[in-house]
Image (tube, rainbow, N blue to C red; front, top):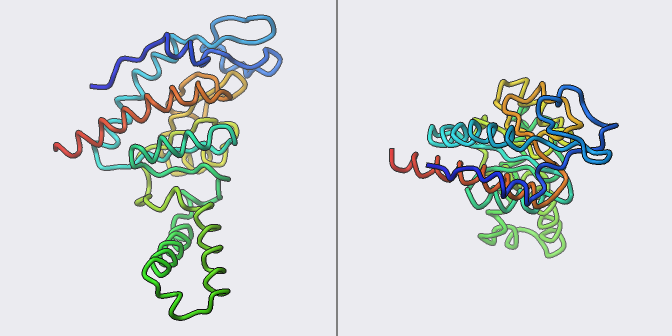
Length: 233
């Protein structure tokens, strides 16, 4: 059973800090607690309520044999998103969202296959046997470039069971593609965002590393529980 959500931990991580009142989206009104100076304060009881629904959902997704794709491409969050996703063995996108990752999976898979093939040939020494040093170096640079684009989704097996998006405004491309395919979105939604396209709205600050990390920890614990349940099935 996943750990109970600690509202104090959310508060200490600054998850309750919203944007300036002048930038708010009216549809976020149900998730706003109050105003402090010229900024909105998110109602953390709503965040806890959301997580109480989201976390069992993520556990069930993974226990049922599906993957969870983590998306967070903003500069300040990409490292923690990558580390968290890798910790629980799930695919991730932390560089620019490339159109078609979900909706044009065949083309994306071709690029991933090319990346895997080149990596294998570099590892087993095949390229060194066939090409000169300069050409091999070019292959290494190509692998590096492909890894930047597709490295996080090398383990993505078809359509994920859910997409976790840590900033739904920054990664609206991921939101659109997931919705086209009907893939459930778990989205961290700040006060300046329209929550309508997000199936599982987690109201919270999407700017702080601490806030992102504490939410990721909850998401990843739920995923890890799903992995355990799947292994015991």
